[in-house]
Length: 341
Ligand code: NAI
Image (cartoon, rainbow, N blue to C red):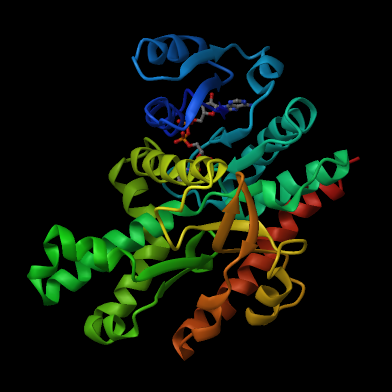
């Protein structure tokens, strides 16, 4: 049985994520933590008659929250507002993630850490460097959650294909189409690289292909704009985060993944196929990249590089652009920890 902790559980992402995980058969104990209101949210969810117990902790109880936790999700921090990019959030969220990951290193050093807070491209390096400094880092245990990009890519691929062929709107066709796309790279703007694995669909999309790429890369902006200052994706993020967490939890039971192309933003050195991935993206020094992962016992044991071996010239272009931006994002995160005493 697995104890799951959510840090930042009272937020727009945190609350629906907590609800979805309260419904998961893979969770035995759900521990909710926030600097505000988590006790009440925990009490509320504890009345739901699923198998798990649920407790919300006050801001001084991080140790109790994390004690014996095997999976820790971090959606704590400020979301995007109009005019703010994910990178603008860096200054606000870097310190929050550093302090929360320090607590995980101290009170739950073997926990798998799922970083949802943005900017993922910089905050995952912060989590990794923090744990390295503490001597508690295990490469397969830190995952940046990029699954919303895949969820969006699956939705948008069907949307665009339906413009050409409305029949694709039928449920069975939709599910089949979902399996034909994956997303790699990073988790902001041009670092997000949707890859349509069935190239005949690229041909079918025709002129809509470029629209599709752009919409996956900048889909988050649609929500920020429509919410008119009230924040960014919360419900779709909670869905994507819960789906991702469930795959991690299923792997504790050796169950086959439901999503074949599940990706995460991971630290490549030290992971099986990590070096190969670096070579294939054309930069041996790039330490982080989102790629399809293989999970065992809750941890990433290897990376599936097959998608990088069959890139089209347009996709290679997207990878090159992404790598340039990613290098800067990663460096920013690393320096935040390495330059501090
Ligand atoms: P929100 O402002 O509604 O919630 C954030 C929560 O974090 C608040 O309840 C706040 O009290 C809490 N918090 C702040 N400092 C904390 C600390 N030191 N310890 C514990 N809790 C703390 O924001 P929202 O909309 O829930 O977004 C949360 C984060 O998730 C943002 O950084 C956002 O950019 C990110 N996000 C990531 C996505 C992804 O695809 N990875 C998609 C959507 C959002």
